[in-house]
Image (tube, rainbow, N blue to C red; front, side, top):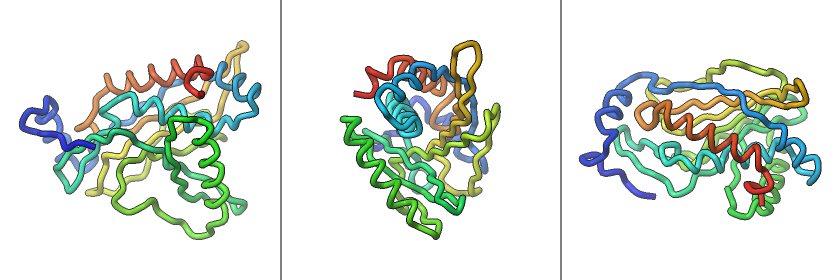
Length: 214
């Protein structure tokens, strides 16, 4: 992790402008082709859900602006690596938060994620992520809806710098499969061009999962 020197930071004026907003986040939803990923998961016996978590995290880590966070109101830091924190539903149709580690070896990631998911399903009270930890990506899956727009709840005056990712129901048409993915991020830290790079990295990984998941 490194602390950004704002005196030489090219985004300083943009950050100061948007960081003063009560709600500095922007949200963009895009459709991603998941045909190759579904075939890959079926062939390997992998969870499509966990494979998606892994690829979303990998794609976000490729964009430095999505690894950048705000601390104590105006300090800006850039993490070397950020990890997924996603929602898991238990048998009572209530969700809880589950945090895992992005291992370079995807096999270790899947093993750790499965353990964390089973432990999370046993919790009956909502347990927040580790207080103060910001090297995360907040994620949720809404597999019942092929959404075209999405809004996450936020606390006004809170820390808005952890990106929020969501994906919905996989739809099939003309022999292809697609899924909508939403990205919500702090506009003082990133812009549309950075969101575009994230989706480019994600689509590339979705099209060649045998390369990304190794």
